Amino acid sequence: MNPDRRAFLQKTGKLLVLSASASVAWEAIVAGRPETAENYKMSDHWWGMVIDIDVCIGCGSCVRACKEENDVPREPLFFRTWVERYQVTPDDLEHPTVDSPNGGYDGFPVKDKVDEKVKHFYVPKLCNHCHQSPCVQVCPVGATFVSPDGVVLVDKTYCLGCRYCVQACPYGCRFIDPRTETVDKCTLCYHRITKGLTTACCETCPTGARQLGDLKNPKDPIHEFLREHHVLVLKPQMATGAKVYYNGLDGSVR
Image (cartoon, rainbow, N blue to C red):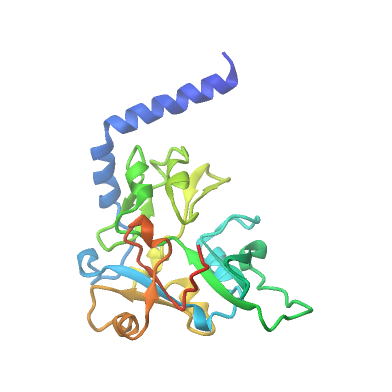
């Protein structure tokens, strides 16, 4: 038998078996909670993040910290979070120049000539941990799911590597880990936040541009930030219920 055909049939068979037991898979995933703080209760939290573009300096500290903390592949193009630089000219507000060398891992090189008329700013991006996640909806085996505390996670023991979720994500926040052939993405450092810590990217940001927030906790500073700033989400027309809120988001950002 042709090797490609054999691999296809094996993966198809696995898909059919797991699809038939999707409810069982779901129960197993939810039951397999990560190590948490002794008093941590999932139902008491609903996690999100605010990003203040006005104070992001594009240093790449968040990208480096994320790769180190979460063992993200070191090769280019694999990122759980990355930073993009937008440059907008007054004559063409709808078509900015966007670059992200190595995901912003090493920061951004200073340009020799600076045009004072060109507006430039940095936009950190990551999984938006949507309440109505397209990736969850298309996963055929329930490997991608939303936890009770609002974090979109992946159980790699069930992931087929079919790439449906990669294609469905409107934010381009998923990739296939070449080491496991399963999908990978930002988890909001779930292993940290369930122990009372913040995410690695928030912890290392030198300007405080990123802040993790518990939307269920009325005393969390995120509520004051949301009240006092005109925050937006990426691609609001997708109605995904994104929970990453941006302050100072330019209309040119897509």
